[in-house]
Image (tube, rainbow, N blue to C red):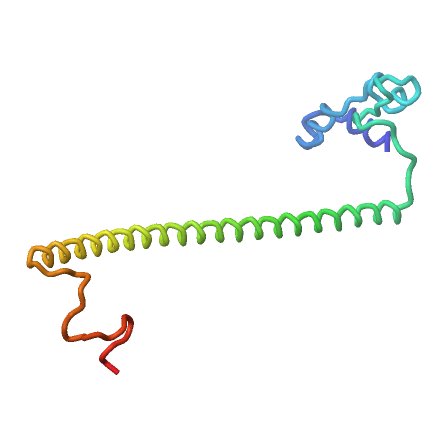
Length: 157
């Protein structure tokens, strides 16, 4: 493989595809950065490899690597499901909060209406009592048509 890349390097630039030219310009081996010199002399601080990821782990069988990635995928799927579940719960809580807020506003409006109606009823009652007092009638005396019936009974029965 090394001979193939060296033969490409010897070929004139015009006969090589543009991608190959770019690859050759970008990939020029340097002694300080080559893997052999990095691993033998410790050219990188903190025992980093050329890619900066740290000390290389020993190669593992493909089945172990696949099992590891499968576990990672399962964890990510589970995480995504949990995120979706939390989002759904949050959206439901926001909807409930909006519904409760609307209900509170409706009840507050009903309270204002009831208080206004009560105030109007009290004003009407006060006006009626004033009219009775002006006519010389005592509102605490019973009407003669009711007679001496005990309080709370009715003649409608």
